[in-house]
Length: 403
Image (cartoon, rainbow, N blue to C red; front, side, top):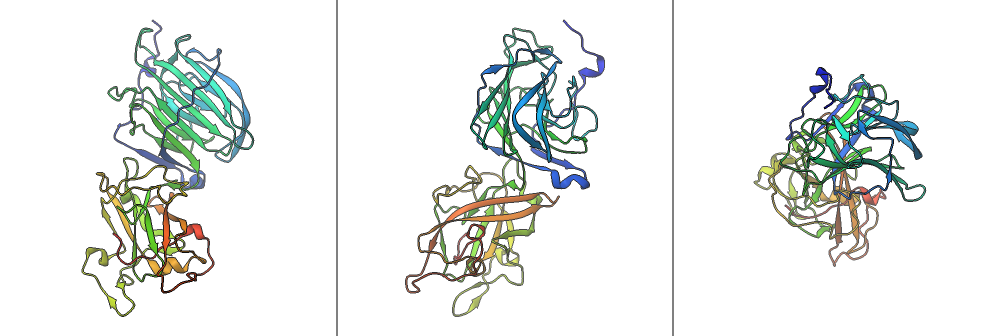
């Protein structure tokens, strides 16, 4: 059996329970990628790259479209048997480290950087081009690969892939993962993206497998978070003629700790969360302060709901659920329903509208989420609700009591 150099036998080990690490230098924070756990849709590639095989090998490949990575354009890349793709140069590195690091490789996507062996014909690296301009996808798949040192007869093999979208989105997908095997779960692998200089990166761990599958989406832009308007209600009806408070929850997951969200930065349609001084629930005849812990601040931490996937791209008011707590702490925020309603243009009774939320984590990472509501108007008012002519997709709410 081939012997590895002594130092190569040591590797950086990640705790499985750790979800996602966002690591960057202050000067490059604007280039950082957001990462989200999304529903897997594994794509099998058909074209075998016969030159990429064995232990510690790499080859250059041409990309079917120009791909923008950390704001740099690339038309080719180097694919390694050790589970990563570099846009800058080839590398034999099998002793993976944490990110970022100036050491090679750099300018890379690390799908499963570990000491792997593509022992053809049992294992292979494959590619596939899908779609048409300007929405092409390019798949680089490592299929049935084994860990260096495991015998050829081993059943410990994994499938994973990088899917490059022409719009710059990166999808990492995994299947056939034994969740009882720590190494298959990535406890000795590096997963993430890193810029060309090796001074900015987003690093993730593989902690959310379901039935041996997982998908991570990397994109330049806000990190998607699950939002639930009026928790435990589905569909969500928004009374635009109410003088009440709208409760909106940002739902925690195994990959999102809501205590890392800065509530002072959260807005819906440009409307900020209610402050301590601007907190009472009102009626049309009088102002009444409700004796509730919700009245002492514009937000609380409480487990109130279960996320609905996907987190973004919602258009149907039935893309929601009325499930209760799921064991993850949530952030429940209160908004002045009148203020949010006033941020809208004219709305029709029974109109479905997607409401968008924006904010930041405490480390400055942008977050975004959305949910759909059905407009409800008091019949005796008739006509349209008049509001300021702002973007309809950025805010919307008006309900008396809705927790």
